[in-house]
Length: 410
Ligand SMILES: Cc1ncc(COP(=O)(O)O)c(C=O)c1O
Image (spheres, helix red, strand yellow):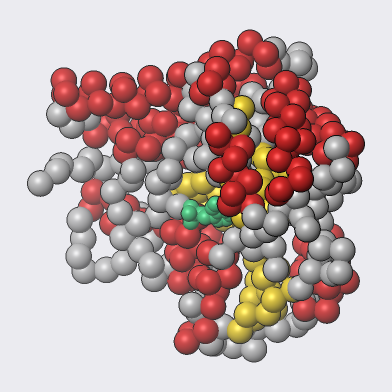
């Protein structure tokens, strides 16, 4: 039987982002070409798959090895492990421009949303959750799962051009809306929703907003305070350079006290080490949305990935990703196989989606040419990150040109 820490110090994590040598406001353009060397897969593959799983950095691999060494030499190192968990919380807060007390470190987006949903009361007149047709399934399924508790889920459809304009949200959000649960960037077509516009609309009707930022966090510069969202959820395995099995839920501080998750556990309690079986005493901060033993090994990878990303700086990463996706889309136009991703920067994330008559075969053919992409719906997704470059765009374009006759849309 493992031995958990008897008591977590009230603040095991650094008090502010200044405690870390990271920056989200780098003035100097990072040397992206030099950074490529930190990702060995880039020597073998044209890796355009960060929207599925980010490339592994040497530093992240080394962090996981440190965990394994610790296990071999020390057996259990709970003090170090809880500090690691708190470090992930603090770094995530820095990344999102939130406070550490507003971050729950979760096992996945789904785990965070389930904890949040369990705390929402759907018994009154305000029982509606508005989701969009751009959602990743989990951010619709979990709200539908609340229907037996009184929830009503309203879907906002796409317009004929494949985008979801604000008018469509206006038609769905009303006085019965409790929550507008939207993705930032769509996992299928790379389209970015007008979050500030949707938030304004929700506020006008007294509704809260949850942002699923899994397809944007780390690839774009994200500030939950200036976006003014109430909740945000994401995970570490894509643009955050970490691994599967660890994510986060941001909960605006002013909402924490009134939300008591029934989906809970001992690591969500005010005193983790109290071992009190007589009552549920949720933590006073967003940790109340956590559950059981933290994903210790995953937190080593997540911490290393977050530190790497923050040292590069998300403003510079966003600029580079817009430049790479813009160039990729222009080149696709030139070869006569246009993407379906919106061309305007404000409507796009780091993914370029290209339609195909058989996207599974197209992705497989690209893989044979050492180009890693992922098929979704009727599209192949080429997702870019700061470690990609113009040569990657050209390798992708050269392969697409070759495959154009047999695999472009009919
Ligand atoms: C936008 C988005 N939301 C949610 C998820 C699923 O998250 P999880 O598996 O951590 O629950 C994904 C996974 O790809 C995603 O792209």
